[in-house]
Length: 131
Image (cartoon, rainbow, N blue to C red):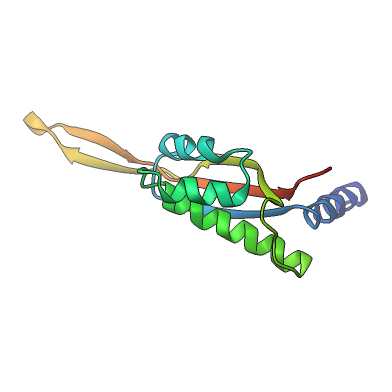
């Protein structure tokens, strides 16, 4: 590894120590469906976001709640204390497209219809309120 590349990698590693996030990869639902749920909680305070996800009728809300609880736990682990009410909020959250499984379904007259089983990756960042 070259000097410049090593310095850049160390800078990225140092920046990640001050960020609190969680990832969930290869969730078996389409990214479009997951983005509907993620858009509900973007920028919200974490306790309010967990309540919103709990009472959401979307199936994807359970996966997003799992990631949010993990991000909160990561924040508490790095800061060695419990999060106070109203202290943390969802700073950034995004959904990327994962691997697509391609399947064939039998169709009339000897044809085959293609079925795409999509998956996604969720990345959720939490941060403290800055006064």
